[in-house]
Amino acid sequence: MNTESVLQQLFPHQLNYQIEGYVIKGDAQTAAGTVRILGTVNAAPIDQDIAIQLSSEILKLVQQGEQTPVVFIVDTQGQALSRADELLCLNRTFAHLASCVDLLRRSGHANLAIIFGQAVSGGFLSYGLMANEVYALDDSQVKVMDLNAMARVTKIPVDKLKDLSQSSAIFAPGVENFYKMGAIDAVWENLDQDWVGQALLHQQQDLQRYLTDQRRVVGQQRQGRMLCNAIVEKIALS
Image 1 (cartoon, helix red, strand yellow):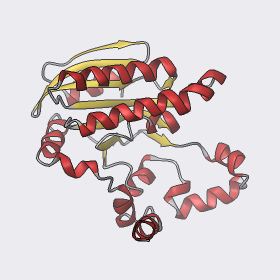
Image 2 (cartoon, one colour):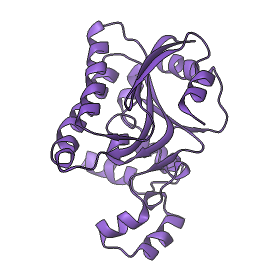
Image 3 (cartoon, rainbow, N blue to C red):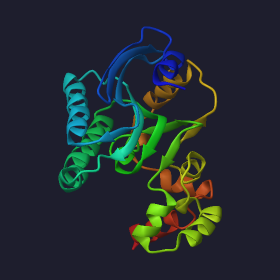
Image 4 (cartoon, rainbow, N blue to C red):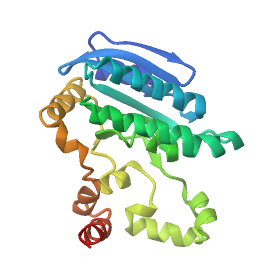
């Protein structure tokens, strides 16, 4: 399913958007009013320029002071693979982008992310995973890295990782495993024009509760992260 088809189904009323390179910007009308659309398409390799573009758009929106809801579109293969991006993008512009999304959240903007295609590594973490809620199409590819790459980094044999991925969502790529870990709120098998607006309206009823990250609790409830919540609570109380 291509970007245009998905957007038309989710936003059938007054949809306007532009795609420049890998960056999508636009507006649409929903039950929650006019929303800002912002993100990446076509499996974007996110580099410094893209991260700064997204950051700048977010800061402009916050500066306007109108608390416009935001829908982040996520389709990224992760960070761009260059020496400059490894040195600067990962710990500078990605951190800046994540901070801007957090500022957006704390400034009273209802927001959510929708994974259209791929959601990989730092490209996903820097803005999509920072949103108040994350939704994914059922055919999305979500992962930090594939098991072969994970084996090279961790020095754990790939066969061992494959065995672990059968019983632990932490080691397994895929949208269902990220749902189990609490990183994704729901997986959309079919698209409905009311879902985005209703989700944003629900957020607007109590935005304060989204400022506290409950994903470790949800991950425990879904049996995707069985130890994280207990360890965090023990440290917090110590």
